[in-house]
Image 1 (cartoon, rainbow, N blue to C red):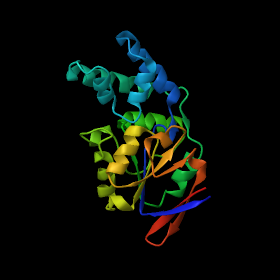
Image 2 (cartoon, rainbow, N blue to C red):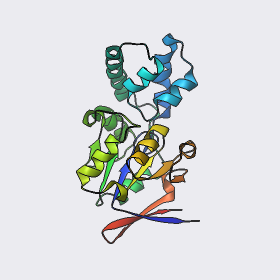
Image 3 (cartoon, rainbow, N blue to C red):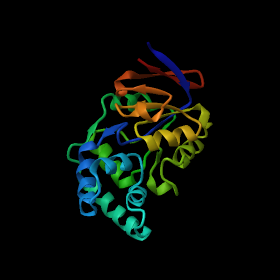
Length: 216
């Protein structure tokens, strides 16, 4: 059964929402985890949606924070240069085209270089407003990034709809007071407001002071 929502802005996560980067994320984080004897599943459940230094701190809580910051920069550089297997989520290009003249933004835990590398590899347009790791002091699941996007667009958070796939991202958007559309097979377990398998189930139509988002 189709659902129609009204919004004044759409805020879009990148990895797992617009871009499928699973192959490279798993490959590089498994390489990082192996010397530390960490369980692969635990690592992957932790890293999605968060900035790398925060994931490292959660996985190695006794380790010096400065080491996490340094290794995170190394990880970001490797991720930015390795885009093998990075592809667009089905429907992502069409969604971004539909939003082109409407208020929207990317809200990602990636830095600018990584965002450009992955969006470029997937052949996707980067929105004019991108809230990246450099622009926030707190990583998802903190709502700072989503609130900054809404504030920059001049739109009340309650009138924004967020698209997210991870537990950290969905929590961040919900704590920002936004309706959340969970994307992908894992999203339902994190309690989004609505869920789609991929972005081909989303259509956009201008309406009044905002636009309608139709979920099929």
